Image 1: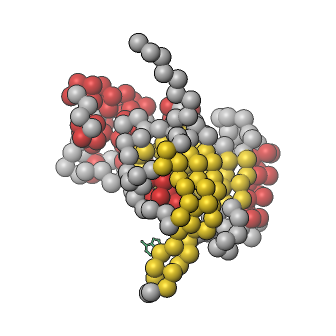
Image 2: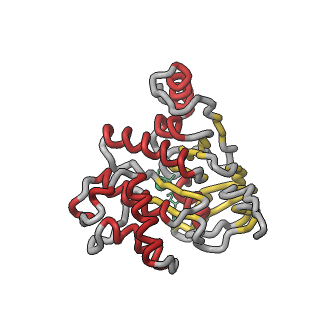
Length: 256
Ligand SMILES: Nc1ncnc2c1ncn2[C@@H]1O[C@H](COP(=O)(O)OP(=O)(O)OP(=O)(O)O)[C@@H](O)[C@H]1O
Ligand SMILES: [Mg+2]
């Protein structure tokens, strides 16, 4: 058997990407000349004002939207539509209400023709990872918001994506659940070595989870700003480095 060395799993490279939408016959420039690199296994957070194009950028990476110009490469190859190596988690988990928790996680595996026994084993592993083993037979309506989102995370991870794309995955949760889920995401990311691109409104969440924070400009055409988060993990929200980074990010948004 030949040994394969995977050196660039989930590596993202965006070059000179631009995207406009047409709005009432006028072109609305949303992203302009964006350059961005995400190394394999890194977690980056994308923040920016509402309407700055965060979701649009994520949808382009997911292959749900095409860029007007520029290159978007994953592991060196241009993306063509959606692909099995990328999984997306949206703000609401979008579970199938007529299927149990287990069946929801198994479903995408079956679509990918993973044999029955293997798919159940795999689903069990990820339900364990998100702490929902005891709820395998429950239906989505019987879950809390945080639990439903954890099923969504298990479902996305079970297909073993190289790149996990998250669009405000914790945005709908209450403050306490959100903090717990941030801790879970940090743990899962560390265990799974998956590359993560996380869109969030929450600067603290960005600092808690990301290796670098990318700030989309309010003024279209201005350069994106990147802030490296060089804090030890697991991160401590009360650490002085954490607090001062949060202050300086808030200042970027004119907040104090
Ligand atoms: N399909 C579309 N057709 C036309 N305009 C669109 C479309 N999708 C997004 N836009 C526009 O692109 C801009 C950026 O939208 P996007 O959803 O990427 O912003 P966002 O940064 O995710 O904002 P939010 O923080 O509110 O989620 C907005 O002005 C929006 O109106
Ligand atoms: Mg959005």
